[in-house]
Image (cartoon, rainbow, N blue to C red; front, side):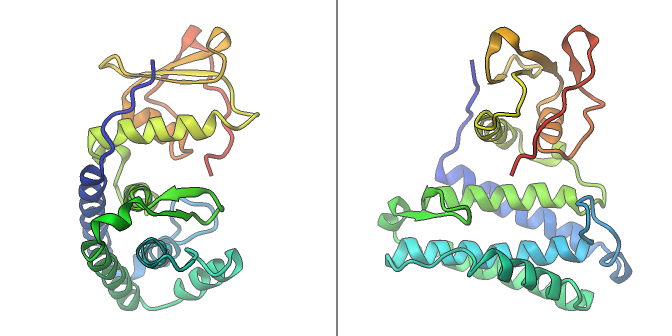
Amino acid sequence: MTVAGPRSLAHTLAWTGDGAAHLRGLMMRMGDDAFAAPSALPGWSRAHVLTHVARNADAMINLLTWARTGVRTPAYASREQRDADIEAGARRAAVEIRADVVDSSDRLAHVVRAMPESAWSAHVQNAQGRDLVATDIPWLRAREMWIHAVDLDVGASFADMPAPMVAVLLTDVTRSMGEKPDCPALRLTAPDGSVWEIGDQTAATTISGPASGLAAWLLGRSKGRDLRSSGGRKLPALPRWL
């Protein structure tokens, strides 16, 4: 059995707002010199992570504009332009980055509030070219906010995430990981009896632990020290999530 958990538009909008406040609070408590320090993402400073969060807000605005107007408006002009914007933005002063994160998040919130009810059923495409319904867009933003809050490496963890969102995240990630030919068969079990499955269950390794720990490990944000593998075996290697 796979536990999906609730994922209504009301839920994802709430998680997005809470995630924005959570990340903003972490950022505001960082000293200026902390921005240039390494993040938990290889090759990126905390300034890179925060700049990415700001540009992601602009990308979500583009997709919502596409949904509202019917005019094709890709999330990013290109992968190369996205990467260049992050590199350039990460070199700014801390005060500029803080303002950008706040302003871009506020712009996105304004666009969300202005969305007509009918536009939420429109279809667009994400940066990888996959079809999305507009109601998926707040979910994508919620993931960005909560996961990158951890990537800042200033004390946040997946345990900070709302428990229902962790359940939805695990369902989302196990589905996408199951499409990867190099992902091992897994059965993930949480203390409340929730189960998420990947691949052929007759050959699956059972991994047990808190849902937040399972999510952190599956997304490559943890070595899984709070998890247990069936038979006491070493946790299997995983492919990249995205």
